[in-house]
Length: 532
Image (cartoon, rainbow, N blue to C red):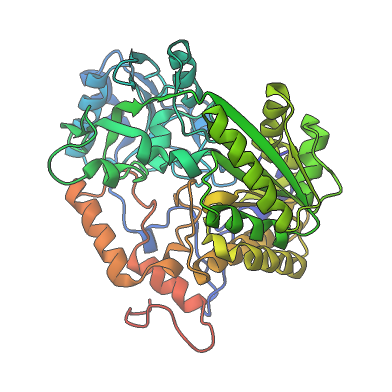
């Protein structure tokens, strides 16, 4: 099984990149295409860098720094978790000390060398995709937990520390770190900050941004800066919130201080089965409307249910069209009362079955099925494309119906797995990249799903970030004034545009070309922009 966007076998490699380097060739009237990989023609010219001169200078100033420069050494770093998009970096550096990172940034700034920071490489939007004319700065060796303060309920950690390792270190004190993305056994906290990661329990406990106190960063010039503080508030602008989710474009993280929460006394999970995905989607809104905020509220459709059950044996009803997992936590009396209320709401919403996990072991199995849904679905098809969009909860039934129609239109199966409580959807598009045209259809279907999210008042991303994968859809979500403002924020931190260039925010040139390709009902997006 090829994970996510793995490229097809070599025999069919032409399906991944055509002669212009396009993975999803969107044709224009001129016969060109929109390149997802960095395209200097529309993403901006990159400085020309003399690799040997840079390598010599790095070795002179940082003799103990591990530097990879040979082709076979660079190959493992040519992509992140979105592995169909690949670029070989010019150099890869693996520092161990903050002083090394600081010197590297100063040197690269002085010589106008682009720098892309990378954590564990588990990102799903190409946010850590390197540049042929840039340095890939790997922060994985910064993997120490510096302090656990049970009294203050905080932890100080380096950016390469795994998400789950924080909770494991805090467990002896009865504490844990709340955000729990599905990749928590592998993903790093620095990457979580860069993407503002969520997880199955973010409905009640918030995203990464809600669980941070402070980050230490280095600017593009190598200057140290502290954003936030050890207290719940700090004077001045809330730059910590601005920085969280900025995808490595504003600075390099060197230390993170996170909030720790007490383990709930009791946690109970209800599993509800439905005979239609629309009813399950409606039940989500009904639960929130009843004034109940679950610790987690997740939804899976039949394709995902069957895959997870075959993989994990979680005890899911395989004949159900959809299931909801609703976790309620807190003190025992409140949890018992909430379970009864939720059971009533689910029954009124049309659930064909509602059952509560009988013990902690069954509760863990219910969640294991959900958290392993992605690899489970991967057993159904040679390839799958994991989408990430957010919609208002009230739109869930209609959007699920539309995804079903798009699935039939494009002739590709879609498994729906998502954080239903906050409307963060993860449709998984199944395809075989070795079948001519399927990769292109999968990406076209993915683009339509993201644009559908925008149409109903949602967003093209919930927690995976924009990276390179969704750079074109940013043109559908934001107008030129908004994008210009985003570029101004970037310039305030990085006037030379050397930190992770080409990610997150498209150039107006790219949007002009993308708009020219997507004329709907005679309305041209970005009509105020000159077409190139």
